[in-house]
Length: 266
Image 1 (cartoon, rainbow, N blue to C red):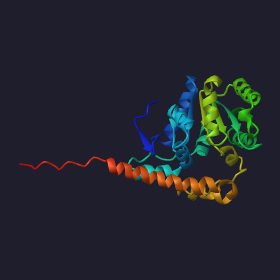
Image 2 (image 1 turned 180 degrees about the vertical axis):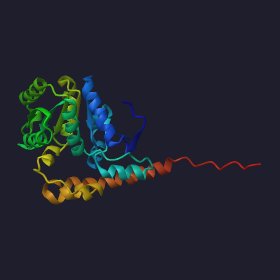
Image 3 (image 1 turned 60 degrees about the vertical axis):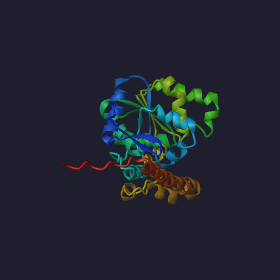
Image 4 (image 1 turned 90 degrees about the vertical axis):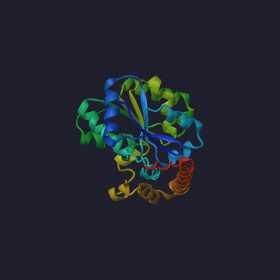
């Protein structure tokens, strides 16, 4: 599937696609079993990190899809007069792709999450979709990325299961680093970083009410739930994001061409 437009949000190119179109593009690629690709789901914190992380930017440039996970990205795009089609939330994407996978016979693998999160999410999703084929879960220990033996064990488990879609919940940018380093050798058609989605589906972490999700306040709900762990990410990170947005807006205004006066009609 081709994409005609991308929206620039603080020098990050984001695909302007609806949720349904993104789901269909991922499912189509997974079914085709063609070359391995991966999807990234930027939010405000990603945009901030991408300003200073060259490796992260490289990973974004090679992504199959870059879809807006956070509502603040939609606000920014509207401010820049290049509105996006809608939010593509990572947890919603995870759940909907599992439904599509059950309907179309695709196999999925869950990597990451807190201890027990992937297994619990598997139970919840298999209870919802009797035909869903979750062919494996794996929860690496903290700091696994520095252990070559653990990295080999993870790869062997995924290769043996041969999934069509690999969901990776390691948090950003660790999950994107790991996906980029491994997606080609694993040969999985589509890999997707989905952050804390296993915990949300498993109800180990409570998700914000729908009205807060729609209002772009899911971050605030999570901050209330886990203030000690998340205050720096959201208070400082969101402030930096707002400053970046206004800086980008000023730059757009500064370099916008001055419209020429209309010719007089004789």
